[in-house]
Length: 175
Image (tube, rainbow, N blue to C red):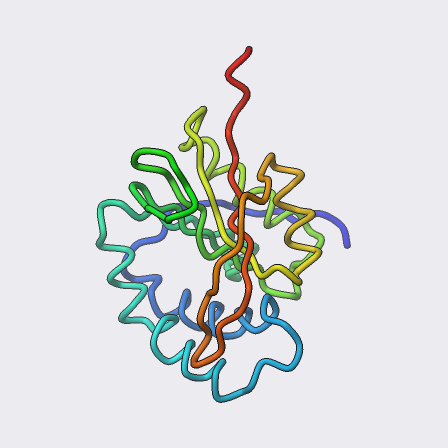
């Protein structure tokens, strides 16, 4: 797929419904095949709602970037400051969270543009993310951006504890 004209901008509260819609549509793609529909529906109904996105968008520690192509929401990424995880032994770490790209835009550079926007803010600060351990495409993408697995934990989708990798990016301190 060829690259398309795209704009990256910071989301605001008026984007909550659109974020929930694309989140609900694309979340399933990162889950393992065989994840039960009732578990997916339960997660989406609690974590990917317009209300939940409004909470994120009004939280001073969260920044949500949108990728738009001809007024079409192609994807989004959430960056969260001071996001702790037991496997990340860094004071006040940054987390790259919820990188979702509409399947119609896979391969068009949307994910890379969103990641670059987030890392422009992160700078030389270490940051982390989590990804399902069986999502080879996403893992390869994150490795390309300098993230490496440091452990696993259970990410619960509905009632299904799924194994996720925690991946850490620590910019080279020897430069």
